[in-house]
Image (cartoon, rainbow, N blue to C red; front, top):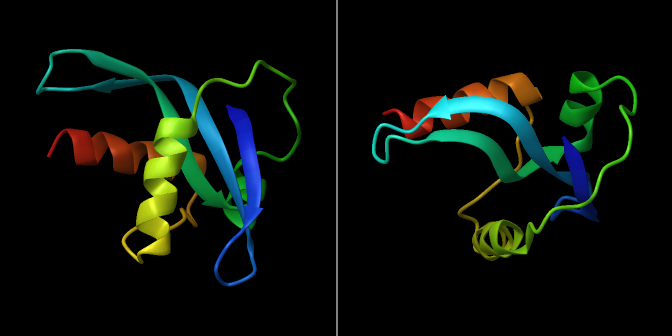
Length: 99
């Protein structure tokens, strides 16, 4: 996981934007396996309960396309912030891709 950006949300709480790698989600539409999610927004509380300590540092990947798309939809009230654990969010993404 890479921490990409931290910012204040509309309700004055903190949003942490992360990249998740090392996963395997089968995409039945393309036949490919998704091995990383380049952008997921989490509440700081959800992220803190998922990761109790800093695991190390890594190079920050290009996340701006995913972030800008999310930000546009968030401002318009069409997107939100995950308040569940990282594992639950990855399961949610798996379900969304495979439904």
